[in-house]
Image (cartoon, rainbow, N blue to C red):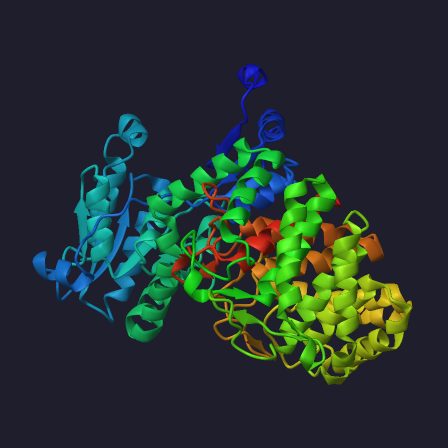
Length: 621
C-alpha cells in the first residue's frame, strides 16, 4: 500500500482471484487497490460482480480480459490421433499439477462407469504432482490414484503422463482430445488456467460447477456435473459420446469464445486498455478528431473504409452526413472549437445538395465519388435521419445564424413529406427532429407521428412482448426514444408510460449479466424466439444510450444512467467477445462484433455512433 501511494503514473491492477469471503485485511487491501487504480482487470464475470458487491469497485473501472492461451498450429484431431496410434480411442484429458483438490479420483471413477458402455475411452492424466504436495507427502496421492486404477481394472483406460508439460505439449494433447474434464472439488474457484486452455482450443468440457466453469460452459459450451459425484460426471461423458451432433455444436460454440482467448487477442485488449487509461478525455478527443478528418473531405464524410482507409468506391450517404451534423454540433456545443463548426458546414452542405426540391423535399441518399446520386428519392429512414439532424442544428443556440437558418429553410421544404411516411423508424427519427425544431406550425404533424408510433405499440404490446412490432431489428431504441420525446412535447402520459415500458423491455432483451448485447443483424429477434447474437453493430449502443439518457432526464431514475454507461462500455470491451472496438492508433471505431471476432473496417456510422455516445454521456456526468 505504501508503494502504491507513491506511484504517480496511472495504475492498472489485475486480479487473478477475487475472494468471495475475505477477512477484514484482505478486503481492505483490495478496496484500496480498486480505489487507487484507474482500471482493474479480472478474468471472469463472477469476479467482476464480487469486486462491485464486496469490494465496492465502481463498475466503470472493471475490465474483464480473458485468461490468455498460447497458439500452436497443430493438425486436426483425427490426424493427431493417427500419428499417436490412438485413432480408435475416445480421448478424455485432464492436465495440471496433481493435488487432492483436483478431484482426479472422481474423474477415474467416472471413467470406470463410462467404459461399461464405451470401452474405447482412454483417460489421460497429464502433469506432475504439485511440488508443495510432493514436498509434504511425497507421491502418496499419485500412488493412490494408480492403485484406484488397478482396483477398478482400468489399466487399459487410464494413462498417467508424469512430467511437467511445456505449453506446446499442453496444446498438442488438448488438440488431440475429444473431451476435457475438470472434476475439481473447490466450489469457489474463480479462474482455472487449465479450463481456459481447453476453451482456447475449442474442446468440449465436462466439469464440476465452480464459478469459472459455470461461466465458461454457459450458452451450450459444455456440461456441468455435481461436485464429488462420479456418476454425474459419467453421465455427462456418456451423453457427449452418444450425441455427436450435440457435441459438435458445443465445440463450435466453445471455439467462437476460445478464439478471443488466444494471446494475440488478449494482448490487443490490454494494449487498448493501456491506451485508454493513458489518454485523458481531451486526448481521446484529439485521437478521434484525427479520424473524423481522415474520413471527411470537401464533399462530406465517406460511408465506408477498408480497415482505417476511407473507401471512395463506396461514396457518401445522406444518412452518414446527417449523423455527422449531429456529431459536429454536439462537439462544438461542448468545446466551441471552430474545427467542429467547419465540419458542421460540410455535412449540412451535403444535405442541402441531397434535398430534392423538385420531389417535395425528400432526400437522395447514395452519392458516388463523382457526385452522382443513385436515386431521386432515398429511403424513409434516410429522410427521418436528415430531419432529426436538421432539427438538432436549428435547436443549437451556439450555432451561428447561417447554419440554423439554412437548416430551418430545409425543414420548411420538407413539410409535404410527413403524410407519406409509413415506416415506424422514419416516423421516430422525424419526430425527434421536429420536436427539436420547435415550430408551432408542426404541432399537428408531431402529434400525428407520435400517435402512429403509439398505436403500433398498442397493437402489438402484450404481457411478455412490450414492443411496437413482432420482431426486434435495427436501431430499436429510437422507437421508445421518440415516444419519450413526444411526451416532453405533448405531456401525454400515455406516451411516457409506453416509452418507459418499451425501453425497459428492450433493455431486458439486450442485457445479460450486466453486459450490453445488441440484437444481432444476422437474424434479428422474432417474437418468442431467441435473439441473433451476431453481428453486433456500434449504432445500436449509441441509439440505446440516447434513449436511456432521455429516460433518465424524464424519470430521475439513475438506473437509466447506469444502463447508458454500460452501453458505452460495449465499445471499449465490455461486450460478448470481451474486445474493444476502439482503434487507439487511428481514433476510429471498428464496424462491429462478428462470431469470428472484430469487423476491423472503420466506417463513418461506427465512428459517429461512438463519438455521439461519448459526447452525450459527458453531458450527464
